[in-house]
Image (cartoon, rainbow, N blue to C red; front, side, top):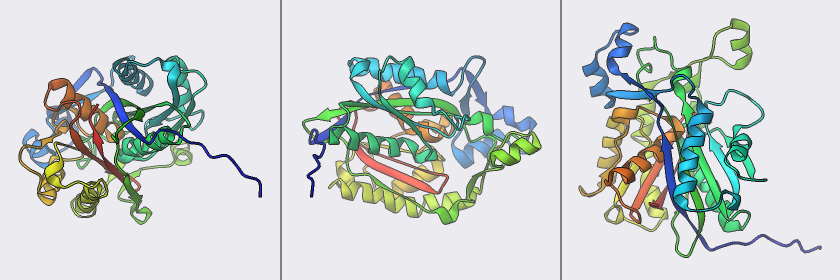
Length: 331
């Protein structure tokens, strides 16, 4: 049998930097009251959201992703030419092909990079991070750029009382590279396709073309809440266990920003110490799908609420149904 040489790389990987981009339009809860029967108080109590950011003129998934990625590259202090792969997680790029990642790589001055898009909804950043960690450790790339960008406002049904006020736009990005100590724990991930109808696109593209109407997002909020506060709570605990840690070892918790009540339930289930810093960016950014975790991470670090080197648990979950999470060292 012919022996095939295997790739090899560093023993460990870590996150070197994080960057984010928020669009210009601030949309408060009052905006939706002209379209749905609700109130600012009801929306805030049910979700924690008071306002969110939506794209304005000249802003789109490409511009947000470029801004977030540019910040991450600059903060990492590396030459873009050293980046060997670019992974973009999004459900908001409406060209089936080509993928947006190769275009972003060229615009960022990253030559001949492996570049591709992934679609894992609100778990997308953690999916991309897991892939980046493996790429670095295999030696296939020295550095990997992971971007999560969304413009969910374009597929938000403002007349749907259950979802109109949930989503915001934005992008986040990280640089992953080699490390002498481990900075990214084992990923805990999976899916349940039997629940594909819990969060869905209202029409496929064939139907959209025939009807002349752009698809929107639909969601069975009650089913999502039940899944997130039961199964995802268990998966979150497994992230700690697989990393060889206990709740007392954790310093920061950055769950997907789906709903403040879901976050509260996860906190009770994990029994985290009171001193653990918890991301609550949903209150002013809304649910940014794949982008929520890197955006929240950047906000915590930029504001001083969290510090470089701290141990953080991240987990995303959403349409598919899919989920992914891991313990990381903050950049």
